[in-house]
Image (cartoon, rainbow, N blue to C red; front, side, top):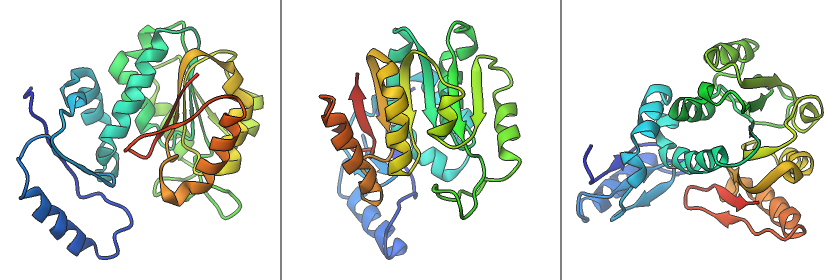
Amino acid sequence: MSDVNNYLSSIFFGATDFEKFCAGLQMAIHQIPPAGIYAGDNLFTFGRNLGFMNDEALMKAYRTNATTAIEQALLWRYSTIAWGFRKGLQLDGDFVECACYKGTTAKIMCDMVDFSKHSDRHYYLYDLFEHDSTMPHHGMPEHSQLLFQQTKERFSHFPNVIISKGRVPEILLDVSPRKIAFMHIDLNNAAAEIGALELLFDRMVPGAVLILDDYGWLAYRDQKKAEDLWLAERGYHVLELPTGQGLVIK
């Protein structure tokens, strides 16, 4: 694998004239050395090592499981999660993802570390798996009454992955770990994310990583405001990452 990496995607969100935006981006790319460029998921940067692209285990799992253009554009986000996930394997406790959708992120992590071999650990995944107007989350293309079963089948080779259908935080009262070594929250709803923190943050062991997927995105500013206040009251400050994720180490 080459030491010099580039990643180019056409997935950007919020452009008022997408054709002009892409033309401008292409013009900018032509003005810089053709190495170390990352463009996609509302990120454009250059002159970077992009060392995560030389992580063979991560990249193999990513190529296997990220099958849509949007999933593929989230590569830098996956690398952040992979860092926290691997750190969790060095600690005591289980793993949590609130709002797994169809399980792509979690499947990348499981394949990356062959999670089935870590039989003393469990990975708890939560989602509603469907959408209607009474639900606070966004409707996604693959939400359906079939998605829960499809996601369970996707993890059929990982008996230590526990998939629960229900609304967060309520479902956490029924099924959740006592100790948490890594937690990823992607609920797209301020009240639900604070509810998850209320129930689970104290169960995170010292050194455990918390990733807040939408923390840095303007569209989800209500989440940032609520989480900043909640965490500040407990002596924590969220690191906003260029990916739009927020990072906290317990």
